[in-house]
Length: 340
Image (cartoon, rainbow, N blue to C red):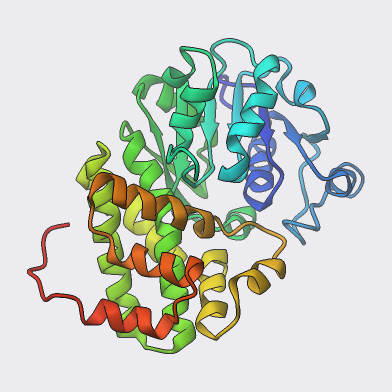
């Protein structure tokens, strides 16, 4: 039965990633209650052991129990895993608050920055919950398509936690022979990496949709990493984090992998399709669309130069022609290439 560190886990959010992580823990022998918003998804998991809407074709372990109420998902739990879209993270936390036991560790697998406040998810939690919750808050991020993890393909990612001893328990909880978890104290670096890589993936998808070539995609990934690093360092992160799994690793995966929702949105826009029309055809969230707003305003707030983010913002929200965006990036003032 697991590793003796945690035995009962509540997972909030039954999208592809939430279902995958819940199933991973259930297969390790933990009793997992998964809060599911959609009644049809809850029925599928309960009766057919599958989430056909968000993770089709994957059989789910019998230890995974879909539940309707927050109270069921949280009762008696020793760890809570949050896997909901960033734009509803605060709202869901407010709903959970009445049922959370003081000191219960919270782990976020959500990647995004709140539009209205420009806060990361750890900052939202600190803002929305009573004092003391932030001490046990952890964030999980890295190059990890849910479908590949659900098929037990080798994956490595990072957990960030200010308290390394607490972080080690979370690291042990999730690690398997196909799912390797590294540990860091750099919570801001991991959160900024996981959020901003989605914006650069939109840019890479747009470039691929425009068919401007592999050279352009490689340049976008590299200079995108420089932009993410500049912003992260301005927000208190360590530069080295951005060369790791949560930074470069997740950026490369999201900008090049066909399973990347953000890259797919970018592809459609690059091919001439409108943003609203593209999003209406998806049943899962492309976090980068909302994060582009936050990233653009964070750049203005911090005075950090983020030309790729600026162009993506103008294409998505100001109707700029993507080809003009590429041209404007290529004809900027010539500069030295800094470290980041």
